[in-house]
Amino acid sequence: MRYSLALSYLLQSVSALSLSVDSSGGNSSSQLLYGVLYEDIYHSGDGGLYGELIRNRAFQGSSKDRVASLDRNTDFWHPVGGVTLSIDDSKPALSSSLPYHLRMDVPKGATGKVGFYNEGFWGFNVDATKRYIASLHIRGDYSGSVEVYFNNSITAKKLSSAAVKVTQAESNGWKKIETPTFHPASSPGNPNNTFYFTFDGEALAGKSLDINLLSLFKQTYKNRFNGLREDLAQAVGDIGASWIRLPGGNNMEGDRPGRLGTWGDINTDGFGILEQMQMAKDLDLTVVLGLFAGLYLNGDIIAQKDIGPCVDLALSELEFLTGDTPTKHGSLRASLGFPEPFTVEWVEIGNEDYLNGGEPTYKSYRFRALYDAIRAKYPKMNVISSINPSPSPDKGNGGIVDLHIYDNEAHFASLFNTFDQASRDYPVFVAEYAAIRSGSNSGGEIGAQTFSMACAEAIFLLGCERNSDVIVGSAYGALIKQYDEEPRTVAVLKHTADQILKTNSFYVQKLFAANLGSQTVPVNATGGGFGPVYWSATKTADRTLLKLVNYNGNTGPSNAVKVTVKGSKATTATLTVLSAPNGSSVNNLPGGGGETSSIRTASLKAENGVFSVIFSKSYEIAILSI
Image (cartoon, one colour):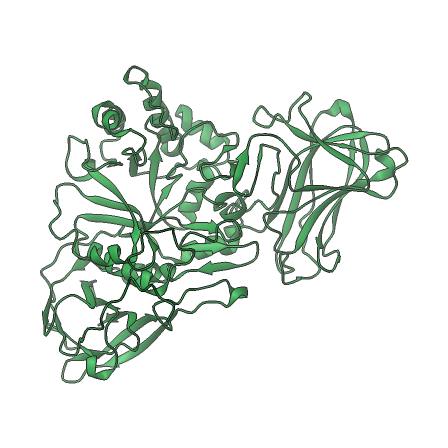
């Protein structure tokens, strides 16, 4: 078994374990227990959730090999027909946010098609069953056609075509050109495709043409304009989360006309706060809005005398998102195509303000400056502190703290009872967690979480669920990463241009979120205690739910866990089991071996009121619904 020698636990017998589940007596459970974190990390936004398929579309800077630069260049663009491509900033600009554009110089005597093609984000997924639409902005003298199409790099086959006639004069300034929607003629079954923009060479011979904001969208999730990659958004929805924190994370500071991202990428900011809020609405997720609180990632801190504008920005952002159209910022939102206010009931002040020397000023003035202003205008707002304990003067929804836990598998398995004695005065959001190393390893991160790592995370989540009167919510970090760029660290989902990898952690969260109770109930154990089997029980109006994790335990009928529910007359139950071949199993991309973990559901009959849960694997997760 490919497994760390550091995790050399002895198998322990669970043959005598019996669990008696009470019908009442617990605490109310948070309905926000399972959530997700979105931030643009390793092309989770651009080249990921954001449906834009063109890379370096507006020449805002570029990144290669995880090194980002604001130097404007033609990265990912290639000339066609002998043209020369360069970056130009001649006026007028397309907009103040997009001052640079592509200049295409066409040689004298050119004939046939000229133009350029784009590599995309590690290729393009060309699907004949889906709609596409392309657009670009041009400036210069040109009368002729603009044709766009996919081309397969392996077969050199042209896979689609859409064209539009253009009559444009230099004096007209910038003009937007948009193609009709089109379907590719065929699906090549691989992402080794490029996308072409071509023009009539004879009409442009000896001339130049300026081009900017080139775009290509495949049909988006719920057909939203400027929307989401359909399959990836659906995968996020399939987690079944109840809330989302956005826009981060380490993604809150600075102006947004496109910028250097935190994680070695250029962020175009095409997937902005409005699109993110629409995503939350479409996925039916409660928003936890992250607000910049004066600590920059380079360690600079806004002085107390200068904190006023930072507070004003936070209030303006809240009005922009939630204000009615007569308000100043609400009317701006409406003018951008979002007339209905969004709902924001949760905010977090800052992010990880215990880093970069930020904690003293966070405690002394930064938190209270934002907190006091927000609670004065929005007295029912739930306010989260990014340090523990919270500097909040209030308990309850004004004194929530955010914990981030990244560690090895063994540490997560040890966290089962960590919140049992936690103060109930200050609720907790575990807004980022992940087992990032297998076993008890302390070295570098692992690229794909093993099934035993996911089981350790499940043990941690059982502890959160048992204490969900104080644990308000949890979210894995990170939600999405681009597989080609970042195969070396964990995420819930990883994607390529045409595939999605659903990790073992994805299925743990999906299973737990689908079986969230409204109230915890006590469980009385005989014949053994916690470990190697861990459990938690909750109930809904009509079901009792018992979650069990077998963590390197024994298997087979002789080691069955006997379960009874006090007062229940049920003779059948539903047993759902998440398992994998062994603890070291990992899930892969569909084209790289596929998933090793699986979920199976079966009906279980009671014998004299006793249900027997039999583990078939030493690492396994079971949920009994009675």
